[in-house]
Length: 129
Image 1: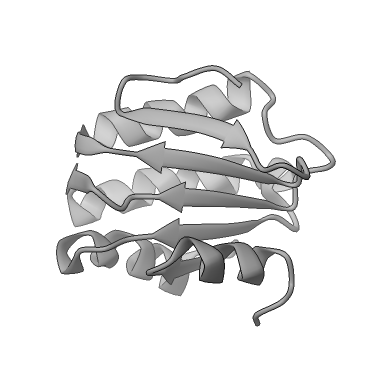
Image 2: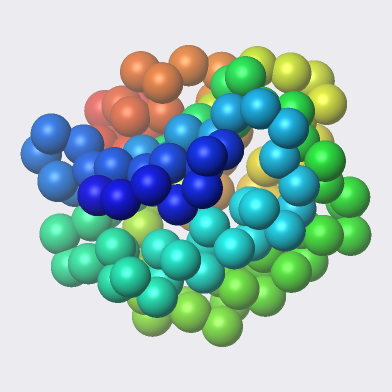
């Protein structure tokens, strides 16, 4: 899969069931939002995908709490595309945890924060609930 920007890259897991987005360095909300749009436009989320891991470890997020509403709107506007897909967010900073926790609380989609890749992957694969 191709690179979205120098800060945000995505690829499929070995089994093709999970999209893994790696986010590194200083990242603005605009960067994150554009990468969501690119996933949608490239039709990266296909019928075999059951989950999406957003790995923000090592990222310095410049996201305002009010920006989360735009992500929620994007998910809502594409309900059929995200239906049944688990969205894991991996963070290693207290500053970055606010964003996924807020989305988890108010989203209709299945969104959950994690601190490790293995836990996020196991949750998506149904090993952890």
